[in-house]
Length: 394
Picture 1 (cartoon, rainbow, N blue to C red):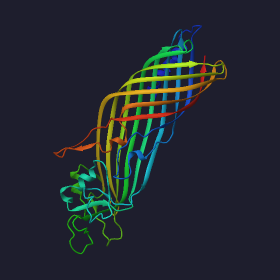
Picture 2 (cartoon, rainbow, N blue to C red):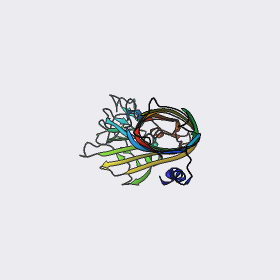
Picture 3 (cartoon, rainbow, N blue to C red):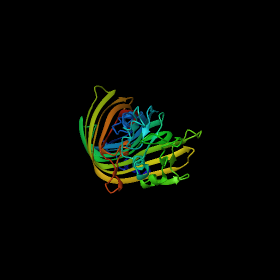
Picture 4 (cartoon, rainbow, N blue to C red):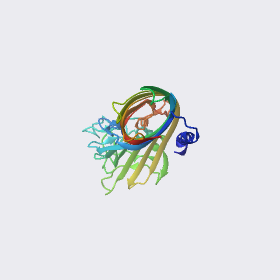
């Protein structure tokens, strides 16, 4: 925060100490922002059901500080904005079993059908391991499931252009830095069970029950999980002869940080039908170098009769070009020659963005069994909203 505000403070000091000319004019504006944003992620989480696009972002609030000065035909302006609180969740209960392995079409275990995780994940790898081929591992019907999203934006602009007080049309060129933080995840929780795929037998079956009766610790470790708590004994099948059963909670979470630095150009129109109201429209176009950090984490935790906790985590970083489009309109209500109320609306679109939910499923397993994660940078950020504020000129 301190480093981000340095350009604003430096410009303010320059305005204070530099000699003033008769035609020079400076301004400071403080705005309250109320922005929404589109959820452009479409990652499928559960077959035939929940996906990342089921969660919509709330309207978030923030602020914008603007400081500028014009001398002669030119002006320089610095703008800092910050918006936090974009978040939402979509949740429900599954009426069918949630299957971890590849036995979805098995009519013995799932005569009414079943749901599966619709992305590459460690639970599938563990449940299809050598020790698990004779069983189907799943959460029983009624499992809780939720998709979550969250995001925040920080934006700094410094630009030089023609003077707005001397030209009805003005242009500008400058530097822009944006930091977009993203997170998204899937969580499911329910009663764990594992039954034989050939006859549906389990621990309480009088005959035909095969070995294992659960999801073994060795299978989880072979899939890349590390035990980080509890008994480290995997998860046991549901046993009707025992009053309680193993509960299982699985969390799949992706997070990213996009740091965009680049140049932008601006064109703006400004007009006043009278001395009271001024209208303005602008368009900013930017080309940015986006430095991206991404991570993807899977946590599988037991409850009730089991306290085992397993973790599988990945991280990656890469850089790519991103483009930005930022149109907007605003109006100024001139209370005096020096004080104006402002109100406006604008849109910000950024391409080449790593979205949090898109990291889920970005883990790949090679034919040799090597697991790797590559941050997904194919997303698009779309934010839009209004602002109201106060401008002071001197």
